[in-house]
Image 1: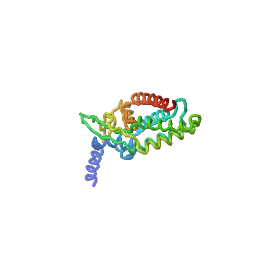
Image 2: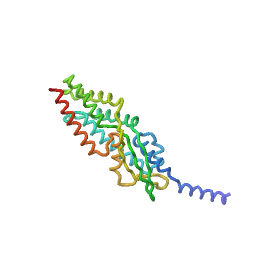
Image 3: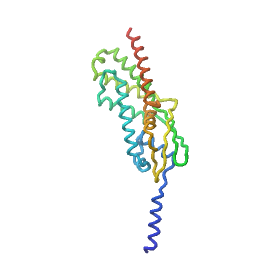
Length: 234
């Protein structure tokens, strides 16, 4: 009996050692479905070697964006509470998962797959402008809002919820490139692409290619809103 079992055992070891990774386009899609839409945790862990590291990177990007966005919606000299920042972030991510879209293209080389994501993300600048305009109108109608930080932040969330009922989404995609490769039956994102991962996150939640673009565009929008407010108060 042993002479029959041994070849079977060796064959099983061989098959285990030669596990084949899922197709590149499927892996590229899985990457976004878990890290952005949070739909495929088990499958993601099974098919990506550095799944935990990737998840931590996205969590760090989310925390940074949460602080930046929440602060941008409230007056510059007003401190945003953790509770408000968390609520704003949750609202945004709910809409990212329900309103955004993307397409995947894969180009294969010897060992690396060049993945191109065309992302139709939230138009966060439009969200911020519409919310700020609504908050400004509320402040003009009720001057006590400007003197009460708690009331102002509650009003900001209220107006943000209204804007996000039908959130503006980019009609032109932001393209982000990532390099992936299969290793021992699982996929991994090639090292040294932290900046590209940050761009991927921003493309979904903000519809921009990088933090610099977001900062510059928002500063310009704030200047325009300040002028509009000054005109209204004449």
